[in-house]
Structure formats: structure tokens, C-alpha cells
Image (cartoon, rainbow, N blue to C red; front, side, top):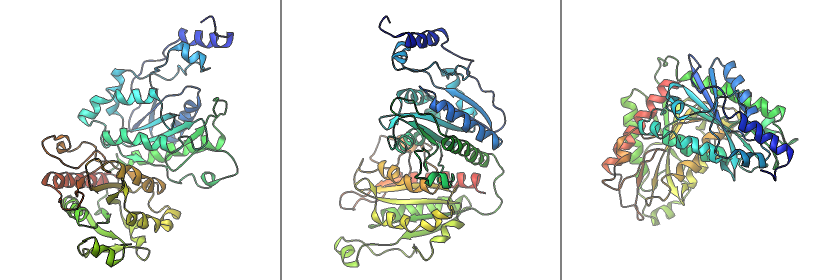
Length: 440
């Protein structure tokens, strides 16, 4: 310690002298949200204050927690980190075990090399008991971030956090472009993306959240609060509508579509099936041995507005090199008018996939497709582990916490198994239940 300068010694002394604040406990009542964050230099702390104000504006009761520090006080002092905000309780294992008592969560995440910091990862690692019981499943979540540089995690920090949320089965409430004109500005350096609010700290942590960034944080809190309230309101009495948009070459995705549709219809949901427009010439399809297309309606520019009538959309995604097929991208590229009008904002969304091989896009196809939902401001609903078949090690099967899936095999000869169709039906049933709960 003798090598520390006086300023760093003062920081260290303050940190050592006051290691914790008030006891972490649930004080929020009624419809409640927990803001959980880590902040080294105070940027996330300031953003959390605005998120809280926005949530309260929406009529939500809020508790704010910081996650435990994993760095030694001496290390923090050498890094020039100020003392923690000890007015904010630090989560302990006891309180982590009670998180299921909240109706929603907003996670404040500083970036380290484009992904969440170790402190936030350590927090998520503490939630294993909730994962085992799926006690956080169905509870909406949102994220806000801080990065040192422009485009140094402003999107990927959110995106890669989705893996934790998917495994818990937590719907992800994206911000979309609800912030309006300020988000499109190129006149100043600023954070905020379709994923959520954000700020830029600069490499040395000297830059503070701007007025625009704080404004976006406040608005995100308000919009998220409105989404959480939808999970607590009385279900609508009308019949809900879900569209399944898909592409299939050899029919594997179509078989999943029909099983999912059957399960949703059994739950009283109206299902509309749409095929993405084919982009390959007939001669190419014939050479590939592709069977004829089904009679399901083709979705294209002429009828794309029908999607605005739906309460939810499920996407059936065949994989090409670990990403959705070009036909699916072609479909999304036709939704620009819906994006401009914000007509899909707040609608529920989910996905299911087909891959040629195990681990050949079973997860990344969902993840790389998510940007479409996010830019439209939709609420992504992962499957989680709501069906025990996902845990089976008795046979090779598809299905993940992201959604139902199948394997086609390298030649397309393998067909969806009974287990995969069972998972597909469970996915459809779960999504239908969430749509009915949150439809407006």
C-alpha cells in the first residue's frame, strides 16, 4: 500500500471503512420491479436512478440493488474507482433467493470487452436455484449498459446477456426506437440503442451520462413498466391472434409449424400461417430435391401489413451457416414500413429452428435472428426449460431454452422426432399463454 498516492489511499480507506449499506430486502409493494446493477465509476449508478424514475412514472414500485464486488479494495483503489453508493443495498444469497417475488427486472451492465463484467456474471451464477425451479420464467427483463468507447459493446453487451435470460425463460423487453429523434441523431456522441438505454464512459471513465442518455434511461424505465403491468392486468376477452412466419425447403420447419399451431389453437388462439417468399429459382429447388411448397399464404410486400393485426409472431427458421436462411432475411427487409410506423412495438415474439447438424445453429440461429425483433421493439419470449424433455439425455433431440428445434441431417433425410414435436407443442402452448396474458 505504500506505493499508492494519497488520493488512492483516501479512496481505499473510505472503501475499507464502509463495506456495505442497508440490508438487501424487498420493500417494493404491488406490481414491483428490481433494478440490479454493477457500477465501478458511477455511470451505471446514475442511469439506474433515471430508470427508477421512469418505472415509478409508470406506477411501478421499485427496489434497487447492486451486485457484490469481486475485486479487492486495493485493486479498486489502484483503478481510481470511487467508493460505492452505500445507499443502495448489495445483494446477498438470501435476497437472491427471493428474487422470484418481483414481477420484472432491469439489469444495469457495464461492458468488459463487449460482454458483461465479471461482477454481473457472478450475480447470474448465483441464480442457479431459480433456474432449477424456473421460478423466474415468464418475468419480463430489460437491460441498460455502459461502455468505454463508441460501438465497444453498445449492442453486444445486451445481446450476449440474452443467454442468461433465455435459460431462465424470461421475456426480453427491447426498447426499439421508442426514443424517437434523439436516437437517430448524428450531431453528438450518445448512447441508446434498440436494445436499451446506454452511456459512454470514455476509456478513463471521465465522461458522464449526457442529458440525452439520461432521458432515454427514464423513457426505457417507463416503457418497461408499462410492459410489466401487462403481465398483471386482466386478460383480454377477445380471441388473440398469432402469426407463424416460416420458411422451409424440405418440410422440417413446416412439420414444426403445424404442431405448434395445433397446440396454440387448443389454447383458444387464432393462428395464421405465412410462408416467407421463395428466392431460389424453380430449377435450383428441383436440383436440390426440394418438395413442392405448402398451400399456406405467402407473406410479402402486398400483405405485410397483416402482421400489425396480430398479438404475437412466431418465426420458423431454417439454419444456413448458424444463421437464419436468406428467405427469412428477405421477409424482414420487407417490414420497413411496419418499423417506421412502430406497428410491431410491444408485440410478443418467439422462434423455433431446424438445423442440419447438432450444435450447428441450434442456439445461434435464434440469437442472430433476435436483432429483427429488437429493432421492431418487440418482446422476445424464450422457451426456457418449461418442458422436462429438454433435459433428457436418452436420445439425440433438438430443443433449447431459446425455442423448439429439430435436426434435418446433412441430406435432409431425418424428420422431426416425437420428442421434438412434443417440445414444439409445449413451446406453442407456452407462447399462447403468454400472448393471452399480455395482449392489449
